[in-house]
Length: 225
Image (cartoon, rainbow, N blue to C red):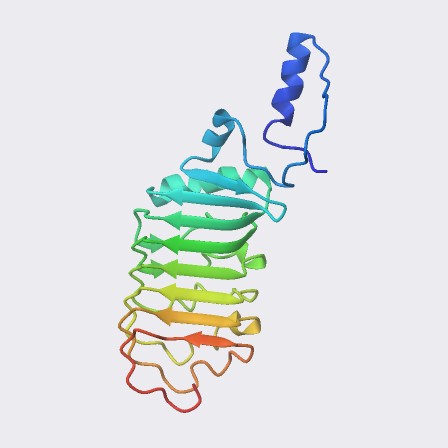
């Protein structure tokens, strides 16, 4: 079993300093393969993020009410642990433009942005994390246009959920210039002013099983969509 990277070094040091033998008695049920830090001092290492659960698949991490600079520091520290992240939730944060390499070294399967007023996502933002990212949820944002260039390398994505946005239309090449169609099975673009969806926009998404466009301003779904 993989050792607990958070506390193993500290336990060994404590035993040596105390000159006492380290022994374990009784049965100790095995914990998750990837545990959260149990010591508050170790947990502070992830600030402004917080590990909420450890599992055999990876960590569940939440980052709340922070700016992009502080978030970058916390995520860099998280990446240094080299544990996979089953779900990263970034909630109620104070930035409108998402950019930089803050996600580059992380192994994230599910990424959620919630109640954060993101207006734009710059190209290459998902570089690196695109190798493992399978679900992307952007909920209650201020996205003004579909960030096709930022999404261009998301070839492992199976779920894309944009719930609450300010996009009035999608360009015809929104998906054709990206790798998203490779694996995408569920697409939701809901709760916004979307009214323009050109024909064949979704044609590249051959694997799509579920499409949700409810509560937009679409009056007609054109043939081929």
